[in-house]
Length: 485
Image (cartoon, rainbow, N blue to C red; front, side):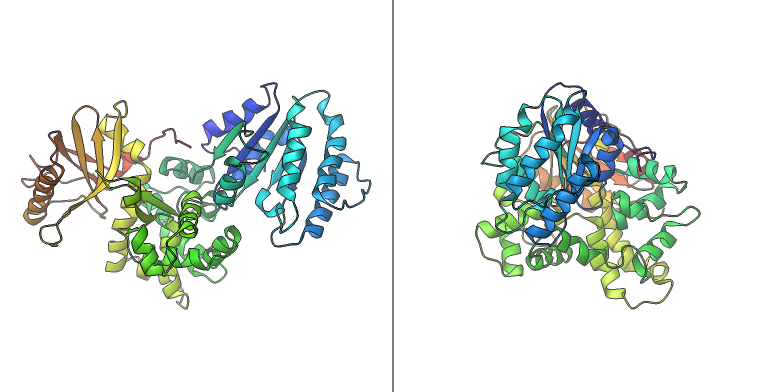
């Protein structure tokens, strides 16, 4: 595993490697959705320095968890000499401190606890024991770094990062590992000798997202259609049953999560909090707030604040590519025959869906959009915008608004087509109307640029000249940029 070079992750890699040289005790937290590459990243950067490693076991009682932990201690820190199974986590961490002591004499060493949330079982006092272990011993060992890792991002945030007890303000480093960008996805595929053009890479991204373990299903010499067919529609495919397993692995009671995901999948334009409550028949209160935060922290949904609105007015969209793809195409066609995706990918339903999927991709690549526009050095805020008018003929919506400090606003229209995009008179008139309604309703005096983002670029003609101020093609989204978080 450690012999395979890692793609991207430059900031994260530098942070982890910096831990080894800083001369203080470190408590680092790494979280991100399932199969995003957390464990691979840690092993790749720190393997030679890890003295003890344990991965929590899902859905077992405390005694089983403790037995596994003590067996790992014996194997890694006690020369394979059996250790008595401790009666509780306080004793287990006390034993850990004694066995780790010898490892701390020469150089900084790493204690790595993977799937940390799974180690917390009912009435086990696990977290309290770990808090005591850190505060009374580990935090005083300048040659020690403890890495806590977990796929249940919401649990890690609530119980570790925002801990109000013994770990409050104790975290020294935090990594929220995100999916690959298009640029990183292309590099990842090339590193495995999968050579696809950028249109094909984007098709793959629409189904898999930037999840490395999903992308690893791609084989050299196959098209995006063939790769998706094998991974998603063959009964032996890696992603055939991933949807249910994914949510159940992350959330203890996933039924409500499924309801929200399905509701948002049916509304690509998104739903407000109140609309989610109504559609899913949820209670209006803290439990729904926690539910939405869990899905957001895990990277499945994204709240967007409409321009001129406040956080409470957020529109939630389902932005996990695989979940959208599963509910739209995989679930309704599970009994399909060989060649299902080749057939489906040539239907009007796919063309409609691909438009929304490309909008989502562009929303995740806003830094690349700003680089393409030459405004990455100008402070700006991004949002969506929807007209207040009720009539569908008078109403308007703008996919992406970039409100700039230099007294300009980019009104971005996003389109996904197989060929260069060409504006007809009707569409050109609709764009001009959107611009007029936007200025009227927002009362802005800023200069408005209509910006077209398309995968194949635009075919300049009499309808676009003088109306489209800038256009961005797919190739301009395939650039490196620094992610936040």
